[in-house]
Image (cartoon, rainbow, N blue to C red; front, side, top):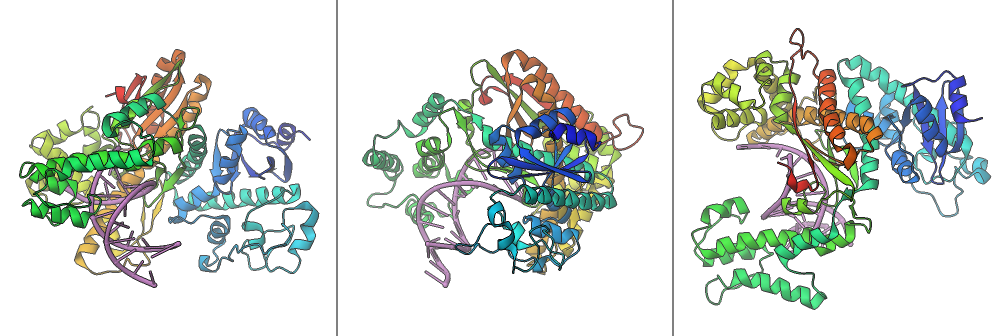
Length: 583
DNA sequence: GATTTCACGTA
DNA sequence: CGTACGTGAAATCC
């Protein structure tokens, strides 16, 4: 039966959970109500458009498989993403997530192991029954073993196709999602909404990985030429150019002294020979010696060029910029403690000079949108501090804060940041004390995070993400380490909540942007870059702002001031041809 | 050959 | 004015 018809007959409605599993050959299985279906992936697109269920995936790999096949789903519930939210940590494979949901000791999850040569693939229909016989745990029809764990035969992947198994796997995914939903409801608050947006952010990540960032090769090569010279013809020429760059620094050295500039140890001796004594050679430390000896400025200049040459040079361009003018890397929806998005291949730490080369395709424009002062605004929201929330009504939040504290703006900003992230020197001074008096609720929130983290107690972000502070290596009594743990904890709650708000905004923009042909092409912690046909650019720019208002209203309710914190979030939004044009 | 340290880019 | 992450080269470990 046709999938849409089957879903309709089962009474599946918008937002209902539908299990989804995909085989490498493009076969998918869908599980809903008491039924399950298997067939070609294209049917899922049709079902998504017709009914828009919330597709349950075990891991983001499903989306990563489907997107290149042209299947882009509206929403999902990703068991791995929700597992990370509920339980923290990085590991989130199906067997591990399932064990947590069933309350089984996660340390004893059966290893997925490796297939021995010649062993039949469980998911190969032809060998279906032979393969599972004699193995512990699950059966060909049941992934759950008698011990309650998922069978390694099912979890180790590398599937060929068996529609029956695929359907079973999709059904079990939906069961896992329902268990997760129940666990999240117990937590109350924002957790279910966060689970949805974190999951859908995984769909966005799969698309970002597939689509890439538009970059103009000619402009990129121009930027490189300006910094490190033209593309070398061969290895010999490259070595010569490198030596020439080194020479610019070494000619400033005292007579007879030389060094390998790529060796920090040798650079330190080199500087010492020039009369500059430093404990290490980091740029911020060398900065104050810039005028002590000409070699320092030359070295700092060399470092900038060397960074571009080694990490973002012609080799980088050749490797990651496709013939279609798209720079690609792998995206993850939530990495590390705070749950920020990450990207590989330099997409998140590209030198500012290269932004000039990020240019919309012909007939298209980029929409650049930056959240303004996101962290203090997030603090106001998550702590529920009414006084700080009042300050968020200003475009520049630090002006009212400075007025409240009776200090100038730079002092107010430092005091705020010191409070949010902890400080290693001094005790905050007068401005710090006034912060405590002016914003006691926000400060108590931060103190509580700091105290819990110091004591090794786990934390939860506003959106419900567990930040693990207990366990291995967290019991040190060393004063410096304890203080660092405190800073880590308070930072994780602010950075983490900001990441949750950002992703909710991003997936809202992703959904609303579809009719305009607007695609998100870069996410950078508090900044979104959209690629959109020129004709729709104005609409898309307004849409991004509207989506922020909508997201903020759901995420930090009470904008009217009657209830909740009523925090205002702002974004700087501009329509540009190149990423470097804005601001 | 794998892991750690230093350094630096982004937020 | 602190935290996070990814990357590359050298240094170090095994």
